[in-house]
Image 1 (tube, helix red, strand yellow):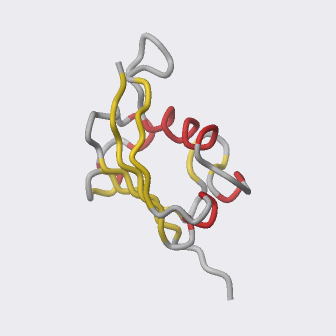
Image 2 (cartoon, helix red, strand yellow):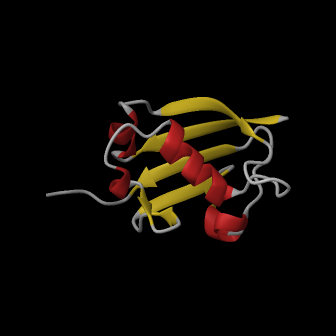
Length: 102
């Protein structure tokens, strides 16, 4: 079984993904069986399947790098459980970089 998820990248994040601002992807419902796919699984899946360059600007340790705002269905992921949030079919997940050079 798979889940259909919409991913969006902005604030400069799209540069890491070959200038793609969004993607609709199908991911396994359980990347680490028997557990359902959660945000941490999704972050690693994105790194392994979509990220085109400079993974250090997207991921740090086991999560997104500090300075990246993550929204799950228009809600800050901190209110949804962050890495433990279980991905659902139809979720809309946005990654926005708040870090800018000068």
